[in-house]
Every structure is written in structure tokens, then in C-alpha cells.
Amino acid sequence: MNKTTTMDPRSERMLELLAEGASARVIAKKLGYSEGTMRVYLHNLYRAIGVRNKTEAVIWHLHRTRPAASAPVEMRSSPSPTSEAMLPAGSGFGDMALAEDLYTALGAMSTFVGPYGHLWEAGLRLKGTAIDEQLLAQRAQSRLLWRALLKGEFAYGKLLCDEGHADRIAALNPTDAVAIVGLLSLGGYSAAAARLAGVLGDKRRGTTAVAVRELALMRALADAAEGRGESSLAALHDIAGDKARAPALKQIAMAALFHVYRGRKQVAEAKQTADALWAEAETARQQLEAMGVRPLSREAALPPLSDERDQAAHSRKAALAR
Image (cartoon, rainbow, N blue to C red; front, top):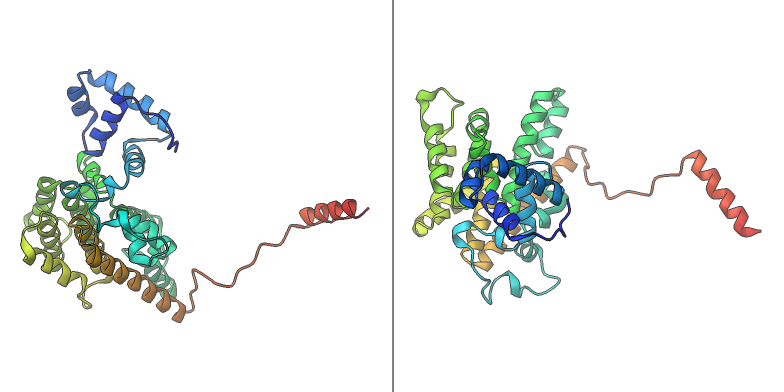
């Protein structure tokens, strides 16, 4: 992706509207063009910034406008003296998460937490269970949602709703349902979050059963994101610290709690929450090592040269020695 492209005012406005979840029709209406003309403009915009579709364009825009895009929509404001803008260099993990985002700070460790992480894969392999194409596709979708939540790319949830994918994804996997509702709630798309949670809670629709615990987490996410009193924050905090809860749901709650604290400028609490998520990742890594799996091996060396390259290197050495 080309991150140095200079944007004209129309392109900037198109990107802003895309990030808000607007369709080509809505953007055309707001900017005073026909829908057909707007589709041409969007196609040209995607080509100019080096992306393939609307989702990638929004992610490109969010990366480009960070840090403003990292905070919940309803909580965005200029950094206060106690916020991440004043963090000292060389600080700990929580400081790095505040200065960048959870995904960047976790790095490769992000693969140990969230739905379908390394522990899930190692468990299946130890049982001798085959991982088919359908399961791989499910995993890819879940990990994409997890990554968007860690990075604070809340508009991804709205894009899924606008393109008609959110209901289908949520109906297939309750954990994905929680992640989507979390993205919508944290992004300020409260109406879309309430509608999706309502659909999932309606047992008459015949979708995959969403357990009471999952519905409770959706409510806690929505209440905390909208700032409905300290009790709402306490509910999300309790879920994030519940050791009896499924790890993926607990970790989704942790990531959401970090964003809520960050949006409220509660820097110390945000850092502690980020550190707790790192501890979850480290625990999972240790469990994998106990199972004989070392996905982040510390014993590594440069690969040997192939015979052909080895001979060429020896020839160059011999020529230099003459």
C-alpha cells in the first residue's frame, strides 16, 4: 500500500465517509455525484493508494490518521498531558500499547491469544484432528476480527454490517458475534450493535445458540463503551478477570476494556489491562512449550547456502585472495 500518496479534498472526504461505514450510494449523495460516477471515483482512489477494496481502503486510512483513529469514535479528543503523547521512551509493554496499539505492541505474541490461537491448533494436532478448508476459513475470519479489535479498527465491524456479512458471520460463531458487537460498540455504532445483539438473542430465528454469558458480555461491552456509569465498567472488568470464562471471550473483554480505559484517558488502568493481556499471551506460550511446541524458538541460525550459492561464494573468496 502506498502510504505517502497526497490526497485531494474530495478523496479525503471519500475516505472519511468510507471509514464511517458509508456505501457508494451514500457517499455519492453526500458529495453530489451520481452513484455510477462515485464508483468510478472510488475505483480510481483504490488504485491511487494501492488497495483492492473498501475494507483495505478504510484500514489504510485508519493507519494514516493514527493516533486519532485508535480511540473510540465518541471519545476522540486531543491528548491530555497524562495521555500517551507524554510517554517516556523505553517504557514497558503497557506504555507501548498506549503509544501504538495492542496488535503492534504484542507482535508475534498476539497469535497466542484470542480465538483460534496457537493453543487451539496445537490441541487439534495432538488429538490427530484434521484441519479442513472450512475450519481454516472460519479461523481466518475470527483472527481478522481479533486483529481489528487489537488495532482499534472499529470501522471494520460497520463495514461487515453494511456489506451484509455481520449477521451471517455472527450466526455461525458466537465468539465472532461478540467480537463484531465489540467493534461496533467501541466505534460508536451503538444502533448497529444493539440490532445485531438483539438478533442473536432472539431464539426464534434459529441461529447458532448464543449463550447467556456471551449475551452478558455484549451488554457489558455496549454499556462500557457508551459510558453508562461505573457499574457498566465494573461488569466488563469482572468478565475480563473471570478465570472460569472461555479464554477467547475473556481476552476479547480485556482488549475492549483497554480501549475503554484509553478513551477515558485512564492511562494507568489502560496500561495494567494491556499488561494483563500480555500475561495471557505469555501463559499460553508457556503451555505450548510444556506440550513440546515452540512456535517462537529461541534457537535459530541463518540458513545454509545451497550448493550452487556456496560454490559461487567460494569462487568470490578465491578471486579476492588472488
